[in-house]
Image 1 (cartoon, rainbow, N blue to C red):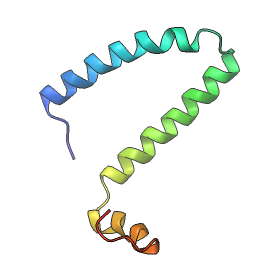
Image 2 (cartoon, rainbow, N blue to C red):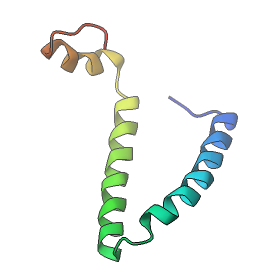
Image 3 (cartoon, rainbow, N blue to C red):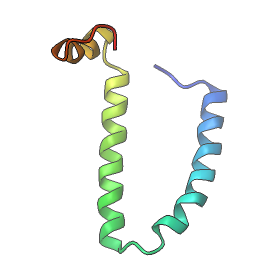
Length: 71
C-alpha cells in the first residue's frame, strides 16, 4: 500500500489539526505519561503499517476463529 501525493497532503493537514486539538488534552500530562503515550502510539502505528502490508488472506484468518467470514 502506498500513499499518493494527495494522500500525503491530507495526512499533513490532519496531523496539523490533530496536534492543535491534542495540545489542550495533553497539557496536564506528566513527561512520563507523554513518553509512555508516545511509545504506545508508535507501537500502534508500527503494527497498523505491518498489517497493511500483510496479504489479505492472512488478515482474514483470525476472523475464522470467531465464526466470521470476510471481516
